[in-house]
Length: 95
Length: 130
Image 1 (cartoon, rainbow over the protein chains, first blue to last red):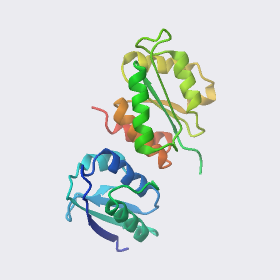
Image 2: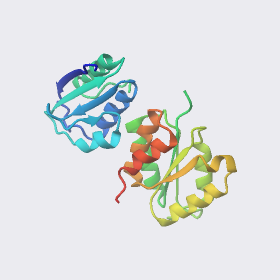
Image 3: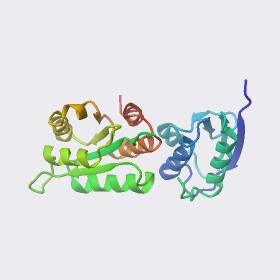
Image 4: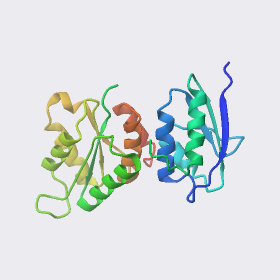
């Protein structure tokens, strides 16, 4: 069994994981082959980061620590990219 | 990679349709084929089969087109528009049972990621009241 790549990051975006940040996070996740999950707490619930409906339903507020875990060939890169997106306050215009 | 699924927005109100399309453009970006229509030929509230067919043409993709509608007539006129299209396109055009604004954003996000027509429809319909 493969050990997942994991990371957590404090989300400081003013409105939290609302519509636009959710779309950006999902779009970025979809650019990787790895299975990627996101959770608003260390013990879950874990949500498919490529599902826009599920990500938006998390409704994580500002100052939530988002947790990521990914399995697959590009899992490390995926987790790193998602953390960067959150750190950049979802301002990354590449997605 | 095959082309992305196209999204068509059909509302009784041109303002609602245009506004919904603006939201999709601003939130998801310009990489998904997108078209909208709204209003009857006289300029009032309503929908027109002809305009819907034009919008489907505009957003056409070999991967298919998903149509988001608001109320009753938008759905029946969209069904009629599909029936009047060439047969090879009919099987690649679906009406999505989801709230028009939220559904359009969700559908476009899934389409952006390369989802199939069925993926796009199912994603938007996860929102639909059961």
